[in-house]
Length: 103
Ligand code: FES
Image (cartoon, rainbow, N blue to C red; front, side, top):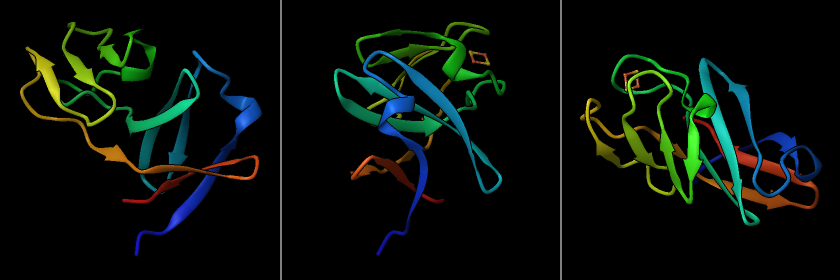
C-alpha cells in the first residue's frame, strides 16, 4: 500500500495556485485546478526545466525552458522537445492536509 506524506495544507494551495515541495530527493509541483490537486515531478524530462514555473492552461503545463507541454493529470508528454512522460504522484486530502505518495 502506498505511503502518503503531508507536504502542505489546503490553505497554502488555493484553487489556481501551485506549490513546489521537497519530498526525499525529489522536487514535486502540486497544482490546485478548481479544487482538485495534481502532483508531478518538478523536473522537465527534456532538460530539467522547472515545470511549476511554466504556464498552466487547464491541466496542461508548458515548460518555461523550451515549451514542451505535459498533462498534469497523468504526466503524459504532449509536445516536443520532451519525449518522455513526467512522473506523477498520487494526492489525497486528509482534513486540512495535502498528502502525496513518495516515490
Ligand atoms: S527543459 Fe523543458 S522543454 Fe526543454
